[in-house]
Length: 426
Image (cartoon, rainbow, N blue to C red; front, top):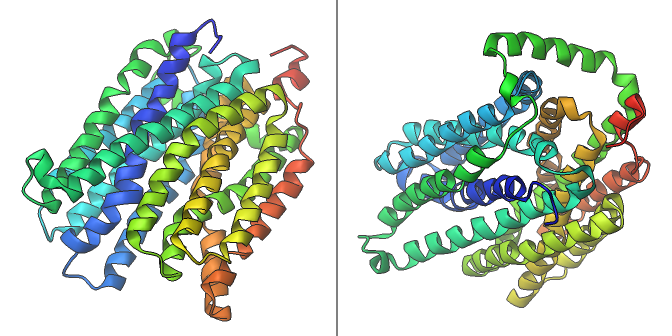
């Protein structure tokens, strides 16, 4: 990483390594299963699914609505890092607290999980925004890709260890699978805390030394947010990008969230699906780095468009899967493009937005990310119900990729708010 502030770049990227353990082990891996089988075992399957959905939706909706407001506040005098660390502490404490929840106490478990999800999602708003403080403008693609790459490998490593803990608890001097899962939550909290330290020490933002009082920041933030909406006409390229992003990232998130369910519907063994999930994590590590390098030398927009074509091909091909090896090939293909789409979307957006309002604009970016994966799963469920075919349902996701790609095609890849409005170079 040829950057004059290399230590800050790597410290920033390590935060993705830190918090991705929560996304893989807690959110995607253990909590949904443990909630049904341990904490909410007395509830029916439909009831436990309902309450898990409520906690996810409630946490996501709260952060989605608050993200632009909190972002505008953070822009007012060096509060991005302080807000990130505040939400991180909340997420770490709630994750560790899951260890203390006894069997059958599903209400407490779901509340702690919801607050942990708020900490995780809230911190990500300010983590994304800090990229403009650590990276030179021309290196945004590579720096963003570095963060995602470390996130995939870091989350994958700890998840692999946690899976081993549950499969062979005696190797870790644990009594049974339930105790292994509970200690896995503790390991995530410790991992998250340990690898957040470099960001806390070595990442600095512009205006940090002149940070203002929280009340004044809130007042200034609301004023800034009002100005943003007042000048919407001057932000056509930014909102066009956000619309495209909302559509295609809905497709990306739907594939990620529904892949296991889709595989189970086709009759694949759960062990095959877990193995495929781990494959995706480790393949995405070098692929994200490569995509960042290509995006920096060619075009972030071009790489995203090609990746969306690959995603569409994967969805079409998945309707023909018959054997376990087919699902592994599917996982490999997704791993090759998933990190690139996410990383280059973040860097392309960071290049477009006003640098002094990065947290506010990444609030909008993350708000759309939280609302994404709403249209896709609903379309898949409806299509499966009407057609009676799980294989046919995945094809509707191609429409989201196509719509997002068409809109993205008309976004000016060279647009920069700061260049256009100040005539300077970034």
